[in-house]
Length: 379
Ligand SMILES: Cc1ncc(COP(=O)(O)O)c(C=O)c1O
Image (cartoon, rainbow, N blue to C red; front, side, top):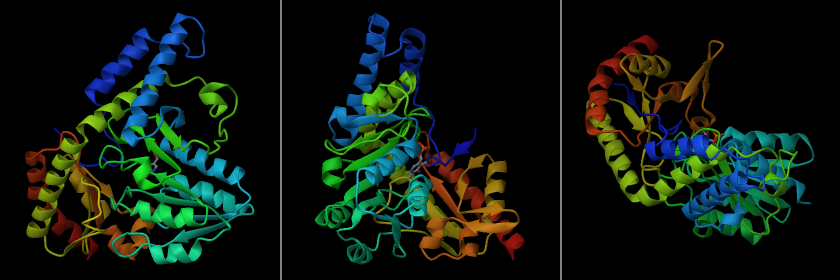
């Protein structure tokens, strides 16, 4: 049996989600735009899913737009805000996901000014720098609620206050936070927010954008009346139902899931800190997702460590990628001040449903020997 510790990359589909999706595929395959009974049934299933997603984030159901991914939802949000605004200044952080960075960079190639606000060594946004950079030319402040690599959670309500003081829009990428910590759009002070089903035991290819009532959403994909003309194309009905079901389960089970994830993540970190010398944890240990652990094994070749763990049946992810012979550190670890070599020595572990003590203990038993070998190779 493999040991999967990469739940921030993706999650398995929950059995109840599978059942709901299979039922859609088998029994409820009508086109939701059709006016006869098959269409009406598919439409009802979509609208029920919309309510389930809205309930997960404390929103009104008619403010939810279904998309094909969080990447698409981030693109749609940024595109919409840029179109609706005379303001030309766009602020984000140095630790955003590429699905926020790249649409912003695209705006930067036109007339907009893009400013990335740095983070401190713990991965928390520099609020002083944000206060200095935000002004009445600012259209958007886009900040990731919980980072995918280090799991650090931002003080979003303070960020919202700073953005709103100058009338800027706050866009929140909550893709990693959903299902792991409570997410409530009013508490966060967000104006728009995105998520993706496959990060919380739903299917791939199903995401959503929430935009507060009154926020204009311009279509990113044109060509049909679907989603109130905000996203053309026949709906991915089974994917949407899977997303809704996953959202419902996440809302119900969140306290139990996150307590268990945190217990096992902490067991892993305590075991690593005791059993392997010269290790350090990246990012805040206080403001962090309950399931995420980012560790530097000083002096080790992380790519090799990842490969050896894979060979032993353990899946984790790396803090750096090898591109044509050179080490490309993750931009998140660079933003925290880590050097390329430090990033190369870094692995991310993320726990989830199905992780148990025996798995953690097996990884802890493997690590001392594997890290020593990965250090020899790098030396
Ligand atoms: C923080 C964050 N935002 C956006 C995405 C993109 O999600 P999707 O796979 O639905 O495009 C991811 C996925 O890794 C993510 O971690």
